Length: 354
Ligand code: NAD
Image 1: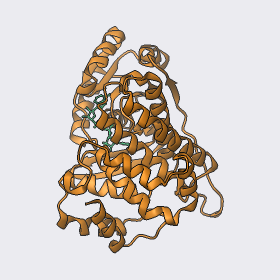
Image 2 (image 1 turned 90 degrees about the vertical axis):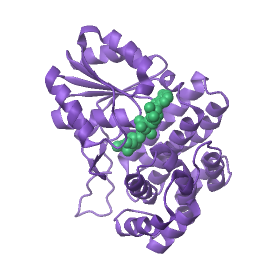
Image 3 (image 1 turned 180 degrees about the vertical axis):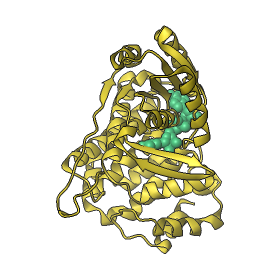
Image 4 (image 1 turned 120 degrees about the horizontal axis):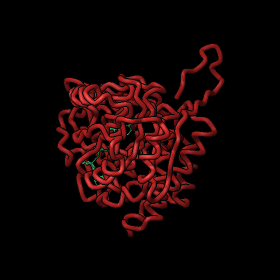
């Protein structure tokens, strides 16, 4: 998404963010060289406990260049956690930050980088796609606010599919469906361009092809690589277009009830597809191509239902009497969507997801 020239409403604008992207098995071993390339002498390594083994390996490889480690990034980037990490940046005069982990680690590095100007290297271990976007969502006192600025986007991204081998099947499934949601919403976005259409189509096809293969053979490096590179394309869709009803719902529900990000996206997606696709023939045609002609709603619903964790809002712990308030909030919040949104129609969707 980009600022539209007000005087030329029919003109489409596409902006591409500069990023150096390394892809491939073993790419994580290039991180020290990437630090050298940035001229970094005092690196802060941010990682989640799930990435303890590769983070330890990376810390050793960074040698004297490693200034400090921060091991407790949290979902939705709480500003209190960022403040703690910022103190560490100051203490060690960090001149670069490396994030190794899921969207939580990547989000913290973005928050540090945008506050200090130090460059960041993102090494993602899930399919959330945050590393490819100039978007940062932060929470303070239970309220999540999102901002967008080119300076937020990591300048270096390292995609190593070997880092995703430890993702359990459930998280593999829900995180990949989280990625698919970015591609789906880019297909019906009002500011879609030929570039985002191409990215979204390729991303959807790749995710829907690679995901069942990875679930069948989770340790297959080729399938993992295909899934990860498709999730990268999906992240670029999130970077390049304005998201619609699906992301509004995920934001409102996730922020209000502190729900697991990927599981929430996964269970909502078939319902939003069913709601929107009749009003989005272009997206429907491209998704049908991605599913080899099968009904996209049924194909995604089948995947979402196969999750061994919560597959309904009720299972996630959302109270039934909270649905109307979420529907009203989402209907009142300005966002682009192919089908007009009312509180009643959104409440119907939420009832179905409940
Ligand atoms: P996450 O980083 O919180 O990770 C989810 C869980 O998976 C955690 O328990 C983590 O420890 C574990 N995990 C991660 N990688 C693993 C691996 N390889 N093996 C085993 N376990 C692993 O969640 P996420 O879904 O990656 O990201 C969600 C966060 O990212 C949210 O805060 C969301 O708002 C943000 N996000 C931001 C953007 C953006 O553009 N700003 C885009 C997508 C997501």
